[in-house]
Image (tube, rainbow, N blue to C red):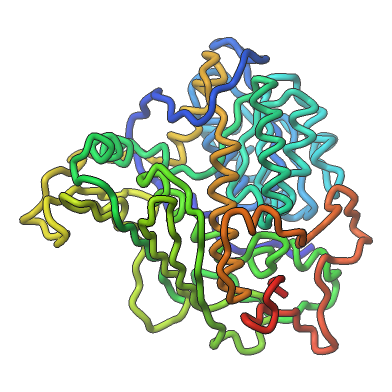
Length: 455
């Protein structure tokens, strides 16, 4: 089996520090099945690549007794690598009890893994995002709490489906976490309170940048022999819009979410552009550059720049500008945020009026600590709706770039084309949602020519 070689984002974050048990809450949830503070909470890991393995590691390091009892993936090599790491790590090995008969390979593995859990246990979803609604739907039926990586949907129909499932999960009293971990950052949360209290006035402009070399994005060569088109697309999911929303949805969603968090609103319109110049013989469906103008209901703007081209200026940051000053929401990726407030628009140290001033705990661990605290102590914690809002806004920006059209929230939600319908019926012998041409290349977005669909 071929194995996805891409490193986990979590591998780059080893920020030490004590962890607060405060909860960053989304929507209210009613009474549901929960674990008492001393009960062992069991986990099933569905999607065993770098993200899933990192999430399982964070889960097993939370306070209170925990146990990983089941794993599932469509690639045996990924599952084996993940199991070997987790079961041999000194701090984790006593919490991993996944015998061979509970390591499931195949498209139905998610059901078998969740069937190993009890109501109130936790299912971890870290497969390509297109499968979120399929797995979330089954978890709700089983009464399981859920941690799912972002994004949670990649097009209008799946966003609508996820909003409906979010409502069902809330009514059932389930706890749901979504992997937009910057919302759990101590420094950002303290600064958010100051911004809400008027420290820099009314926000009138936000801007964000995720610009790196092409090594930051998977460039996929033509499919090798020995693997089907479907399995190759799942393995290289960042390269295929149906599977992940491509680089725009999978990477830029973090900047979009933290900017919208500080604005305390979601955009109502997106206008976007982009281009594809440096991909050569690579077969992926992404653009090299993206530039998006989001508009909020009050008319204020959020500008987003994404780029994966070698030899260019690199930046990974988010900024806010208000009527009385400005803010650096993040300036060095996800962590540490190094967030600061300024009394002018200069962003110069001489005009700084606030900084966090102490080490920032790892937000990847914090999101799990907050989530597990909510499960053990029956606190409100359901991020499914908010995670879907972030995914919808991200899809708006990407779709605007790929079609060359102005995309409103309503237009995105009502768009009839689902990039990968009937994923709940998929088997290893199914045709892939997108097929290559005679040269082994896949369709790419053509703004203006294709006005109502991405490819």
